[in-house]
Image 1: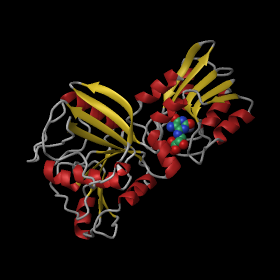
Image 2: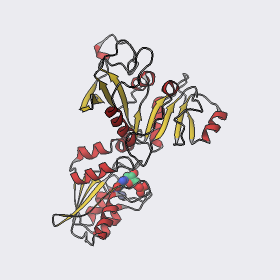
Image 3: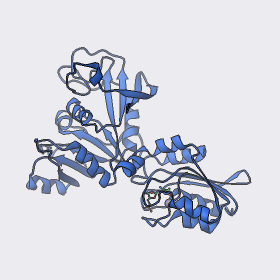
Image 4: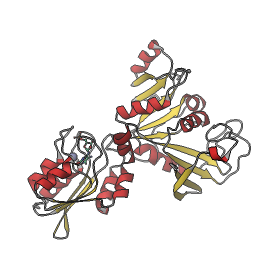
Length: 356
Ligand code: AOF
Ligand code: ZN
């Protein structure tokens, strides 16, 4: 199963909106086939592994199949993996986690068992869940998993008082940040950052065959039509203002303008994430300024922080997220650290919202 997880890890950047799945077929203590989910429309992990066994001249009859997600039992873009498995008749299927997709959700396992195949589940469950945190979130609650990337000094500042910020963290931290961009379905920023920095918002420091979609929160639809991020990658602009002429011009450049006003002149952020879930977005990478970061945190839109700390002190200047002044320690926002790692001369902290 660890080998199957490693195979799934290798397709981290390419399966969206499908989950990343790995599959290993073992017979007489030998691996006779292996595979991972191909880009949407392509075969699932089990089918790749079955074809691999076939091409090696191996029979899967009586073998054990290790797969990181319950095999599907529905016709989606591809036929059910359960059908392919039943045609090959392994003796046993070991699964890390059930498929939370309501179209599958236990039915795949039930059909394998009904055919007399031994089915075991829950092997490396936590690792499998972590691999598909976004897919699971979208299936369970209808909205994507959202992490916010922060880069700051040891005293929590993201720029000098005059706005100068390039670069606080080092090259290794920036490259690591691009790995997170690459795995996400979409990279989200705010109009403040676009106007201040004119970012490209694409993946550059790691190799990937797929660029994530771009999202800009732009309540007043101020996006300059010369912005560097407009490079033909599919882009969604969320706004609170109607400007049909500008929306039509942007549509020619692969940009869709979505109006989601909150009634106070801003974009309805929780509604935006529900909309993203309905539109097959599993994982969102937020890289924005302190204003949008503050709004997203205040509105409970963030699941995880990815915080890079540089060993410098910047003194009085902008922070990473503008939050209201609090009088009581009972009201502070609490997180739980899940990982600490050195990245070049910087440190990366991962923290999840503390539900307690
Ligand atoms: C598997 N193995 O490797 C993956 C699965 O549209 P389709 O046919 O590609 O089906 C997509 C659904 O299949 C997806 O929502 C999820 O429930 C399941 N993904 N299942 O047996 C795989 N990636
Ligand atoms: Zn399948």
